[in-house]
Image 1 (cartoon, helix red, strand yellow):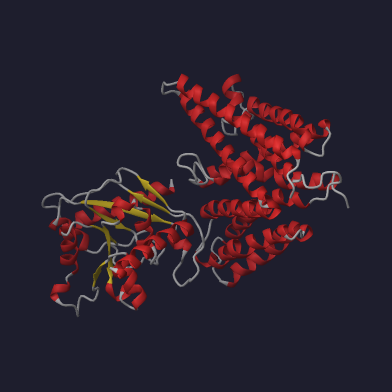
Image 2 (cartoon, rainbow over the protein chains, first blue to last red):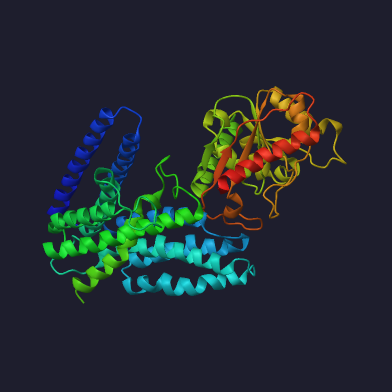
Length: 316
Length: 214
């Protein structure tokens, strides 16, 4: 992949933005030396900024190796996410083959399909083939206690951690007229918009107050956060329209859509965590959660983003 | 010399392999990883239990920590004997109480290892737990050990999820995440009755399991 001019500009911009964010956060941390609620906010912000540094560095490094590098990166992300997910799902001794199938067959095959450009099969492999094969594999072992729960939870993990996540690198195989070789910028755009919205969802209520969306939802789900997330997502997406094949107004709509999905994804994953009685999905960095905690909203929005771009912008 | 170097490399390899497969996390809940002489007593569900505890211990503790293991398993072939004796530096005990020498007494061997300055990892259930119960009743070895060396910290150590990684009868491990929780240490009280002490130790270990469930 030749490095287009936009790539260098975006990379420089991101590094500068993160540098600025790191400095501001460090200054704020010095400002608020006291132990209080501000400390938790600033530490969370720091954790996110560090995660973004990691994302920028990893995605850039992967991009140096071309499309295959990006596929391998996402395959590893899928693996880490799937491990976090399946650690928490219902399983019994008889599910060992099912787990082996998930890790050692479904995951590599899905990314092999992406890497070979088998987009048609890639979009049905897990929802159709794995969906039908998995329960057979479990039934063969004979243990029927909690069967449907076990199968359903495992399939859910495959859908989210492998199927949905693999749509991000699949963007690289879309044939968009006049956008040749720049497809990786679509992944960057998606991640930036969703992560920006995520961050705004965290910060806005702390600046502007909290009005809970509904009595039943967690207290972190506020109207302020929701509107902040969608607003920042749309603004970021529009400002960055120059790295996409979208016109600014199209970028705004696309950004709204992915921010909305990302918001929903965060909510869904939080509900699952609550159901399973855990605070974080993993312990990638002590006290700061796992891969799924950082990437749930990206993973959730990737498939729809992929299909929208494919339908409206890709040739053929 | 050569054998020792190979054992060192194999030890690092083993730690790396266990870390890759199980992404293990040590949770020090009520005790710190400091160089004190300790007996870690853990639940036993899998043959990988030793390597797992061993690999979550910090290096400076690992080199002084010896698992107490059954000789009938670890001496079965040369590879296992190499890992058991040279890599893990296990205190090998004979489980066959009918036919063993008096000098093979397991408790005496453990005490000798402690007097040699080592920390121990023991599985007080005495065998692998293949039931649905979280924890089997304890054998008396822990009590005898505690009475003989009452100053040593007895650290309850709960291993979670390893039996899902490699259930009995399976060959290929699946890469699920494991945790090892170290709880606050217990000590035997002067004159404490055997049943009461073992029950207390048992409850201390089950409590870690329950804490993980909540």
